[in-house]
Picture 1 (cartoon, rainbow, N blue to C red):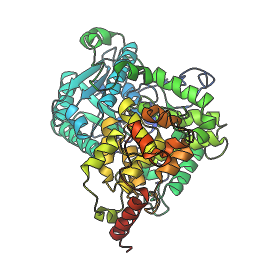
Picture 2: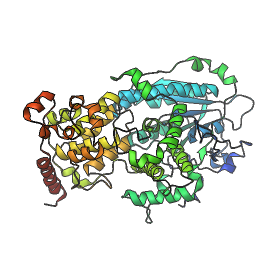
Picture 3: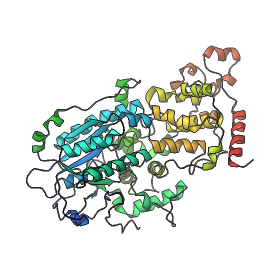
Picture 4: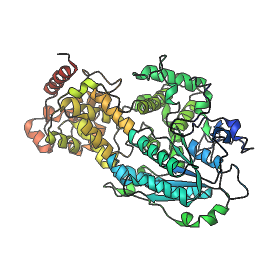
Length: 553
């Protein structure tokens, strides 16, 4: 279906496409003037962006009239009030058909630790979510929107929690932002089915708000998903550049009538969890990653104004502060990908694929992030035949930064900070898979267990790219040489000295390969590990095994 001609339609699962007709909503709610979202500080703060009116389903689409009571917004990985399609639609619905101040928008957040554990969510990431939950509540409080925080002791209890809130708070419409992962889609389907079965008068609206351009619009001429990033990105860019509605920023939710603060006083007084136990320095994590939309937008503005134009040069230099550091905020939905693209495009004089090298490179990275959401879990079946080693000692030494390869061991940054520079992620991932011949899924899980910005699609896609098992991954015969990677991206050893301090006294030349640069006696004095493999032999072993698995030998 053409993106420009897509009509409002009900999905087979009973949810409603967020592209429902604006004119239908105006039958119920009028005079909602579009107001620009002003965010952050600096030169982009006063730019009035076009807004999208996300609308609700009209009465004529149902068999009989819709009875609107309270509207419920279920927050998950979209912890923001700006540019949130589902939240705005819920706000509009709460105003339909009301008399006086009797209908309200209510917010819900469910703590589901069993789900988090099954998904290998890092404790430091959950802590970041909780800190952002506090700032979200403060923002909602200003709009007189109560935030209900519930705990599901088991993941199967999530359905019951939603039902109880719907029943107990007089909800007629439930809204949420679509999550694209398999388990989350299954959970949402079960919730919809339960509500349809027990509460047939309650309507569910699911809003796609992660991909910028809906997946069904970015397809080949035959209607199939792209298997290679470049044509995907070219099509995606063409749509974004020619169809302005894709980058329209959704306006802010309206405030509830102040009466809501009296009716739901217990929720306004309640304090949500503000932290989650994790092994890192709590104060340092708060300093590195302050919570809240204001902080996220301030970082976005600063990056676009001060660093983005050099992004193409600095993004691969691990010791430099050349990246945006926005990934934790994007992962938690405190900031939307669309907001980032809009800010970059404005700075790039309304260009996406041309213009400033740094800005267009960063926009392309955002496009890669979106692409991986579309490709989640895609892989090359033949690579399942690879016979990985089961060397637990090598895996442990890899996690502890004791491989004897300095640039790989500098990956200890992850355990110390919950973060690892993207270039290092590629280097250490390639080393685990192609030098140690250890299953990439072990590394994927380890990253998820430790990353503050761990994103299933990005992490899975990154590991499969490095392992040459995924869609459009690097060719199997491309194997990073740790020494050459070190010399190229950390030529003076600045990153290595920061994270492998036992080598800080070495010269810029010695630090990349100390076991070969020093005499055995001098090397022993360092207290540093000897290389656990010989790269040339390890590479040969890997290539032989992959050729066998792919049927090339």
